[in-house]
Amino acid sequence: MNMIAIEDNLLERFHRLALETHRPETDIVQEALSIYLNNDAQYVEVLRQRMEAADRGEFASDQQVENLFATLGD
Image 1 (cartoon, rainbow, N blue to C red):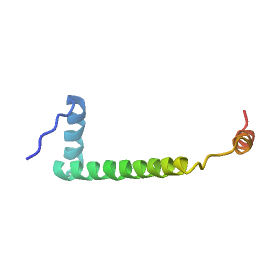
Image 2 (image 1 turned 135 degrees about the vertical axis):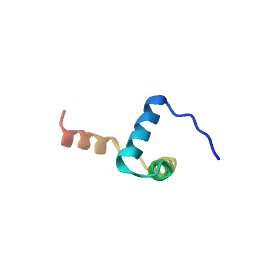
Image 3 (image 1 turned 60 degrees about the vertical axis):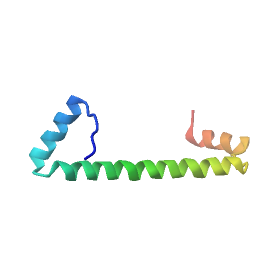
Image 4 (image 1 turned 90 degrees about the vertical axis):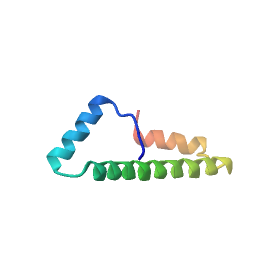
């Protein structure tokens, strides 16, 4: 069995959700953790791709940046 520390307020909300939805607490934890890890993995992958592009020198030119700001407005 694994143990983690959870703030009292968060733990109370968690227990209430399980009761109100009639779902096992284990299912809620596994679903929430899976969603979080998938989202975090996607974020890390995007950062990795951007860092690789930067390492290759793939930056926006000054003119491209100016055009973007002109499009977005002040």
